[in-house]
Length: 231
Length: 62
Image (tube, rainbow over all chains, first blue to last red; front, side, top):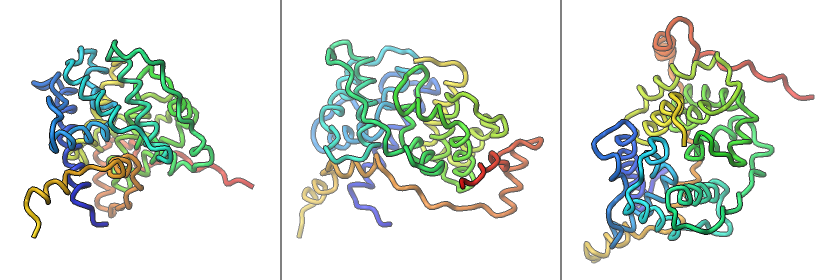
């Protein structure tokens, strides 16, 4: 399907932002200046939208590496949360993404005094097959954080074999983003079958799809979490 | 004829629908590898592990 110019620009901005996050997660030079410094003008609008699309992962280095986030980055993140709330009829993934950002903001910004937002619910996944479940979980991979409980993570925890099956399916379909997102979830789930070969699988996903920064981000996050990184 | 500025404005005019579309993507079409690529995958995983062995299908209901 042909994409609009706006959507192409947005995807490019998201990939640029994800590249910065990956570099920071790998211990690159700019562990703190991941987010754009300013958000004025049209370029700023694009950057802000990219932060909203990348979601909580925009501040993932601060969460997983336990480095104090730069106040300017937190301000941009907060602006993205406030500028793009989900519409009333938004898809569940959109609502959960925003919920995850609000949770992250509460963690990194002491000035946020509002209580935790209500969870959007997981009813749309109640009857989902393992293929759909894995796809939706992969889209919501920014919620896959160690020690961070929510209804989505609890639901994922009840379906380790389904997610494992979905991970294998994604690899075989060469859907590297879905495979990376599912692999990230699998690092957190109990009772994942050993036969999945998760470590080798993540290596393979990175080898085949790692040129996509969003793939690299989830693989790197999974590796950090497998090595014991906590939020 | 539209000015460059107008075009730029249109291109960068991010709408919430653009963001929501990015946050709710449809599943990408699958591209299955051929047998040679499958063999490469088996070699990569090494010693019989495992990506070519998805979990056993669940029994059908009913």
